[in-house]
Length: 145
Image (cartoon, rainbow, N blue to C red; front, side, top):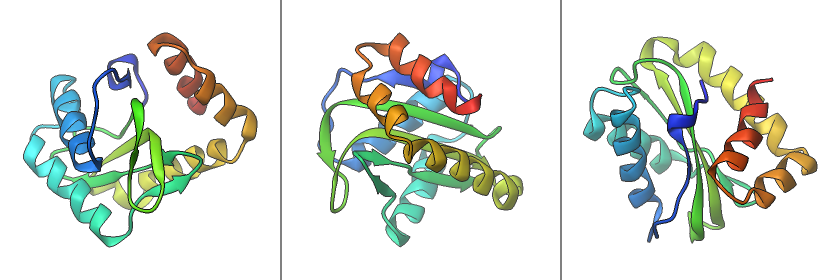
């Protein structure tokens, strides 16, 4: 679900969440997680338009349900600088992708696991203190433990 190919410590600037969605689609397509970038971005945007996915603590959890998702994943980004997501600034993005056929079971399990970690101050502090991509990956990999 979480692997080094889709965990990035970003060095580029993003103006808004929509640029982040495009970046994620490119990353996910290159790593074989999705089959159609445009469809995936559309699915994430549709969900985001219903209710913005910022969850506090500089974290957002955008997600999309689509037939173009090959298998469930969590792509993790630490943005170079925080961006205004909706009402809050976000620097950590945990993008969940779920195959349409698995949306009812997988999405709830993954969201519960992520959110339970986000509520732990020690986990958040480890995220905030990660200095490079390896340290960032090491922190987010503990989510699956």
